[in-house]
Length: 366
Image (cartoon, rainbow, N blue to C red; front, top):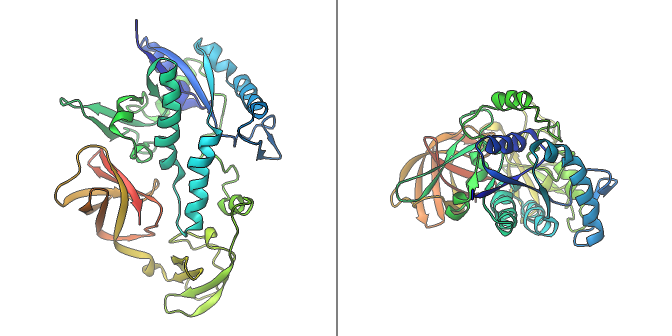
């Protein structure tokens, strides 16, 4: 009997086409859709506020709504789709991390946190409980297995869409059970294939970088959280001169220009968030440049480098990989020295290391 593959179906076009491709390759598949508690369906929320997690009654609202939304996909593919309740874990693992990181004066990257802990953590476990040997997603990335049985992560072939950055925290065990059918395709070809095979997504919009903040206004999301208390404070330049006041450090990130509201002949940029004194430190654009950074809690996908190695590093998802030297300090901490000065090197963001198209690993900028 053929092995069973679970497909994480969000309702979007990418995961839908991934499922369709696996079917054409004669895979036995089952669909899984996970509930975070932050869905915007009016049947599941009250005025955009998620229903309380952990109650059977509230989960039934989410489950019924999700099954209704995904019913055309289940019919078109002729597969079963199960709904997985991830609300408690999503809140404690992803949302609480997001809030805590901002509270500590850093800028979080929840997608890097979600993939190893929710999608290839809890959801993969749910897939295996149902007898599946692998979990497929619509990520644009590639996995290759070498002659020694080790798994390697590579960039997807579409330079505009590739998503290897978000998968850099996966372990060997997770990569061994991961499947990315779209890694060798262009997004334009995925859209054409969907039209050709009449695969109509349940969600027309592209997925967002942060799925639990629909408005894309992170400050407003944090302000509305009862466990988060904004702390207004002073704005200073790098020489210590007070220039004004801010409404909370969570509204700013390194390199930011907008929202500082300190009139000047030359614009100010955020240089540093001084959490201890609750001060926003601003300066001119050249003062946001950095020649190095430290990265901690590194996940090495394959072997750790034993000596300094030349790499390309991405400092955030939209950042183009740049040349640098990696100096390993401990097993999970390294110093990165850039070949050229870099703007807005932001504590809390993920730094992902590449050797050509292969992902070596990634960690958190300290």
